[in-house]
Length: 229
Image 1: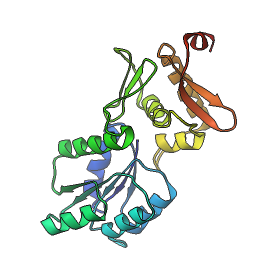
Image 2 (image 1 turned 180 degrees about the vertical axis):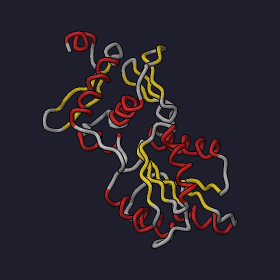
Image 3 (image 1 turned 45 degrees about the vertical axis):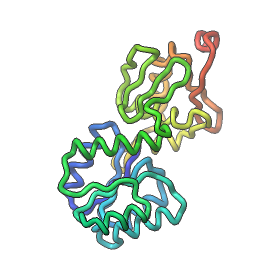
Image 4 (image 1 turned 120 degrees about the vertical axis):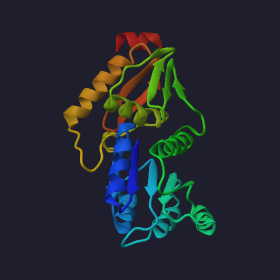
């Protein structure tokens, strides 16, 4: 999943980015509030990790503007401001969770998983299509009881498609889900990832169908179609 980290402390940002990358997420980092606000307007994210004490634009204002635009993206506030009144104020502004610095990365990672689980699967721990089961926050997938051996890129691709299993996902949306600002994915690289994912899903009762001119659709198919594809 793609996450925006808004944090001006470089050492904290480095640790959080490393943790999120290790969890298989694409991460963009904004060190100023105005940059975070602009990124939230221009890109689609699955989660915002937000410090309150940002330069140029306070984190509270970033959050207020986000909610005023009607965006329901989950927001995890990480801040040194630990007063009860401040927590209540920020939660009332629309934050979904609040973590006080300093914190253990293990707790941070657990809160990220919980927020992504709620947002991506409406509280369900898994998504299922055909014989394919996908644990989004756990970055695991199975065909019935057999684990799928997927690379981080292949799982990211499956994740992006599974979250939109009822609608077409464009190539631009796939690229955005798989890359952060510091990465590039060529058309050939995306085609290779799709080809490899299709091969691994062959016995799952699902297929990645190309919708010419629009994108791709993860759908349940019968055995005859899987065999002939």
